[in-house]
Image 1 (cartoon, rainbow, N blue to C red):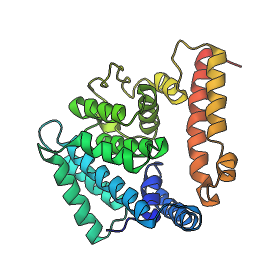
Image 2 (spheres, rainbow, N blue to C red):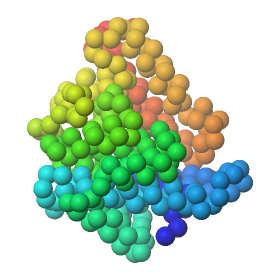
Image 3 (cartoon, rainbow, N blue to C red):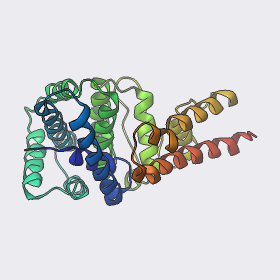
Length: 274
């Protein structure tokens, strides 16, 4: 199957939290990606096709593996997978392949580590792509069982294999929970593999705000301000556009900076920072 940049873009759009709108925006981004790659990438087209195929295949396999991690796939986890299929706007053939991959990942003998190794190799270790991959898995888990118990531990292991730190893991989860993911499963979660403590329930928004800014609650006011400015600089819409982000994605970039701003304002108000 040929996975185009448009399909990759749809996945990236979904990962922003804008749902179908984000997917449409992602399609535009993916189209621009296809055009750019056809003009400037020296790698054979077959290599790019391999990256896309491995990324999507592994995404659905891992999704199935995480869903089955507690021994059975619940109706809610199946519904979550179907919701993601719709978000990706897969055609009939792609849906069948996605289901096959999901079911393959559920099998007891599925080699998750091998699949992740192939993914990392295909992506050339690109940290941004690997973060998107993890975020998609976290979204599916939050929709399915609230990212609890064994599913949470397995996601922690996936993060470690992909080279994603515990701080980045907490940052991604905080952003997702601030967007409303996992609200129906806010109770009783297990720990994050690798010794990192699990973030608290959604009922503690101040701690989530610290996680969004990637700072500890014990950080000084100066450290909080520096973290806020760093994240705002990294995610500033104009800066992203100057690096090649299509103007159609401006609204999405603004949404992310608004989440960062809201987190900073929450901390600033709690501390009385002026």
